Length: 88
Image (cartoon, rainbow, N blue to C red; front, side):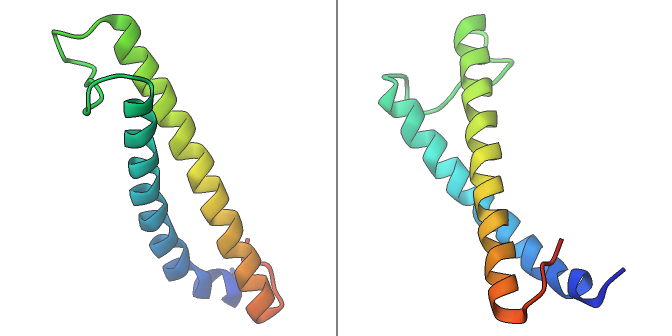
């Protein structure tokens, strides 16, 4: 394993935590913008419909994946700018 990959591991972990918090905030705002309750339904929420539960899960997954990819890509690009090597 390259030294640059090993050195990037803590940065990648920190970026992962940041992206999770950011994605959670984005999802919460998107869910409210769609006119739903403040909290998205859990899969075991008896009072919610299948449609609402599956919509929430799909939207949350898409937002998390998109935010994670954007943050990871920005981190890798910044690392290359600083060190001259791509961390991946």
